[in-house]
Length: 144
Image 1 (cartoon, rainbow, N blue to C red):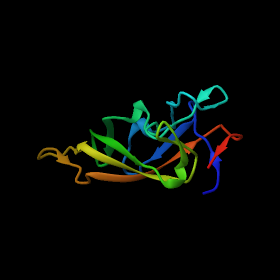
Image 2: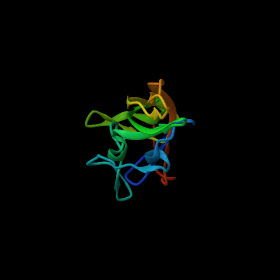
Image 3: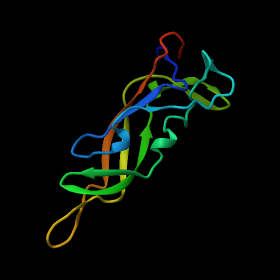
Image 4: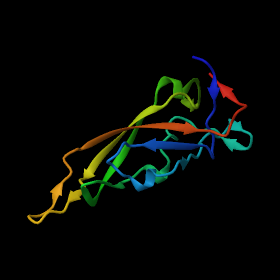
C-alpha cells in the first residue's frame, strides 16, 4: 500500500448522500478531532481508527427527501477502506490517512413524511447509501 497523508485534528470529513435526500448537517465538511496521545502532525494529534465519525455526525441527524418534506431522523455509519488506515498501529488502533473515497450508510430511524390530504405518508427508503472522503491540509507527513 503506498504511503498517504496522515489525517489529524483540524482535518475534515465530507459526507455526500445523493439527492433527493437532504441532511443539513452534511452540507459542509465537518472537522475531525484526533485521539492520539503520542503521534502528532505539527501540533495536532493524529486521528486514529474510531475518530472518523465526529461527534457532530453521531446523530441522530435530521433529513428530508422531497416529496417527504416533514423531517425524519437517521444515523450515519462509515465503512473505511484499507487505503484509509495504516498497517501500523498506536495502542492497537490504526492511524487514519487520506486514502480513497469510502462508503457511508444513512439509516433512517424515523422516516421523513410526505403530507397528503389523507394523512402523512412515510419515506419508504430505510437505507440511503453515500460516499465520504477525508480533506486534509497536511501535505508533508505520510504514513503507509
